Image (cartoon, rainbow, N blue to C red; front, side, top):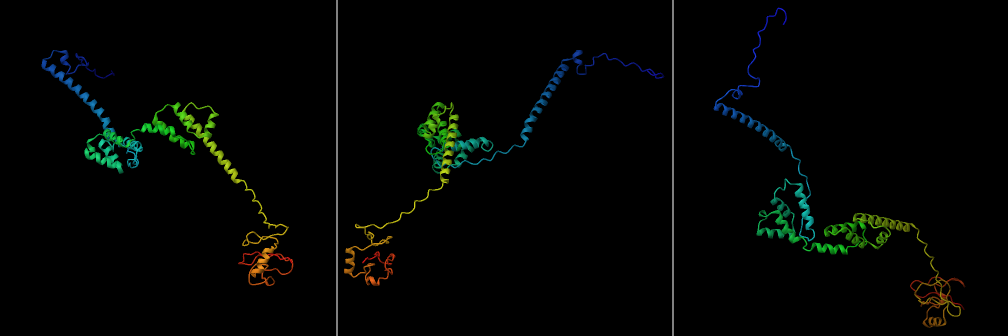
Length: 343
């Protein structure tokens, strides 16, 4: 206390505990039953108020999520229309189920899913849906019932047996191993056979040249490794054949043999006779008339030199001038070959 400051009166000390309040008095001093009931109601009211606040806070989180903008569903191409072709049923239904899985908000009921599938039918498949729906509307049936009836009509009943036969009869042929492996894997997946059996069937269907290549190597332990090895070997062999073909085609072609020179036939006695066919072009060299031909031309009044009628040898227009002159080609229109007459 500062000097000259009047003394403050002492603060009165309460005789009640600091934790007691007006509502806690009944617990210290005796109270009536009415006051005790009022105290219990107040405590229960406080407890309910606390629970209400907790529930309100918990409900606020889902409401925030619900009000958040949803991402739009993906745009998917529609499957190709199905006309009832046997063997395509499974692929068609698989594409439809993929659309249902990726667009659950759009197709949220079984009736919408059935309507979607029926909308993609045509031909005899649509005729079946119309006939079956006329007996009992599709809106009253489940999706499972629709798919069961659909598969019973358009899915092959002996599908497993057909697949096994097709797999055993499958061969590579002239196509590549990659194409052969694609068809093999499709059939193998549907049979459900184990890998050792599938490896043996795959090797049996390969071309002979690839069987020879695989025989010189260790057989892979898995089907995937066997297919990969066969594809690599086939690609190498095909590339090597292309190289050989390119090399052979780039080589120059061998020169053509020179044309042979035609020679006139020689008659017995060293004389050259005329061509066997008198209407063919005259061969090179000189020819002499036989006695029979000379007499025939004189008897028929034909030129002894060219064989044409209407003139004699002295006035022959095709006879060369001067003795020993080479023969000239026969006259146009004449089928006789001119010859040199020796006197």
